[in-house]
Length: 124
Image (cartoon, rainbow, N blue to C red; front, side):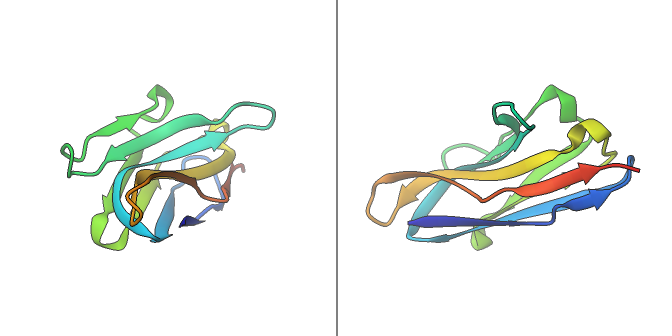
């Protein structure tokens, strides 16, 4: 079983910054990709940013158009941790942010795990 624990959410003023962290633990053999999603009330979860493992491909990153140039995703493979640096935050970035990781467990079975979510609120 693979668990993801997120941290770093909170309340910030427009134009401010936050850094989210997500640490994966458990029966992990290899993590292929990690990402951040967000969900607005009554809406489906949407991709914010994702990053490859650097094993199957370079650390390729992918961003939603709405966050390009403001958010940066990175990962520390040694710590099985992914980060999301969020700058120039806007009120429309207010949402619950979820971490996601996909890979291979020690059982050699694929896993796709989610964190519990962390609230980000951008307001003056």
